[in-house]
Image: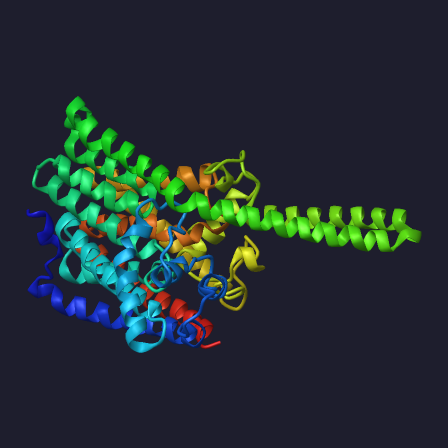
Length: 473
């Protein structure tokens, strides 16, 4: 299988590709429409307008800013190559801005999201048919089921990195799955290319490429030559590049921002001291009140930060994102297997850093339906694991899932809004159910198919209605 041939759309996939294209074009057009009046005018203050004014759940719109005014503004240690991947779209938008007189970042990003999402649909459909072995109807049903998940659907329309991560991960799964099926080993150049693509978008996902190589290559993975060329050197290269990127593109801006912040703080302090001197008669009382006010502000800020982000294990570049205070069981029920798949009616697409509670329960009158559907999907997932655990490909997917659960549930990375990471792991649910369908007799398969059809219809209607209500609000 030639590496680039996977991007060719086959004749029997054209109808599916056209349907996916129509759906994602429509959904991206709605997001563009919602923010067009605010984001399209040319401005010299793109960060405040394009980033601080965007609110769809906890997703960031930094891509809009980078495509409008290129800077390495992603966290370079978590997304080491993403800023540079956006340089060509930035040049395209620069030309469009000169031609049209408006900022076309929304249109450029929507195009990239649509293309990535269409290929994600195709790769997932191929996984079902070619790797797992479900029939054509079941493959289409499972594909529709997967993309009805709330935060899979959202990943395809928000200007964050998750649509590109989903594309890269499904591409890796498809290539490694084909090689397993054909009893071939993943070549070093394929491992390196997939690692640079996947880790360049989101560094922790690069580990999944190494797991794919391990399950595909077996003992050959541990050969010194393979370890050095396919694992150690690419890891060192991307980490060294991240460090280079930070010191040459980020540090100067951060230093300037810190100096400006310190300057403003010093100016405010001077003004405050002058005001205190002007109140000579009550200077002691004023100082005491000021101290009490400052303590109250600090306490309020700390409470809000801990409530929204959780208490980290320790402080540092990565460890600041850990969380030991957010309750695990409630997060798994309401967020991991809840919000990731079904939106909550309260605080629809709210952000935990802008008032949304970390834990939200489903409310009446849909409460019974939401929890029943969550329990049913989880049950199908567990039974699917039992049917799939004998397959090496599924063990590889399971290792990815366990890695994410260790990071999110164990260490608490992003646990306060774990649902936005659904694109990194949620595909294991329909993959497990796909193995269950393949292993079931015809009579059971028909019943499972009916249940999946009902779940898919409900999720599309339920999540779609809440999404449209938010956009048109």
